[in-house]
Image (spheres, helix red, strand yellow):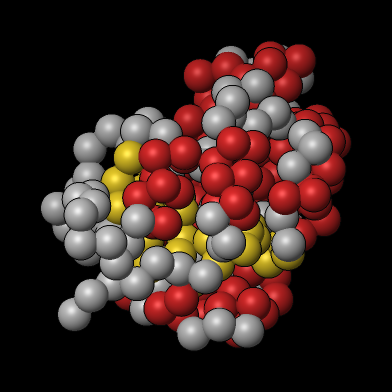
Length: 229
């Protein structure tokens, strides 16, 4: 079966479009080591996944505050934890984000974002970065109260765009996110600059690339017998 190019591309947000590293400075400002950033984000995702898998739900910011305080202990107040979490709205995008979105739009493909975070925070990020004019719609898991990689958010994004799941592609930097999208019936593109190696535990992406521009170009080439991704 020939895989056709998507009519919509959904970009994951945190780490795919916006790197986390600047939050290390926020941690330092409240007396925490910047090295706490990676285990904190890992635990944040773990708890969000666990809640979703057990039929419960909490929004991103609430889990972010709770997991940060759990790791930092009594030395970190709830107020300081919330101050760190507000830094998610001030992240700067990777240098190739705007170009990748323009390549998609110039190719006649619509662009949305799909995030485990809130639509409000994502909209703020896009507006601050001047990317809002390139993004048709901001879709959050808040709408279905299930975190990715559960199938519901991916299918909801397709419904919100008025397309079949196989006409929507997810682009993400995380193996688990790409796998979840594939299992939900979406096309997938994996940008390898974060995790470097694809896990053999997960379904293979339709397209892999070292940066977002290459991934988008690969998705636009799907169905072209002369293209190899």
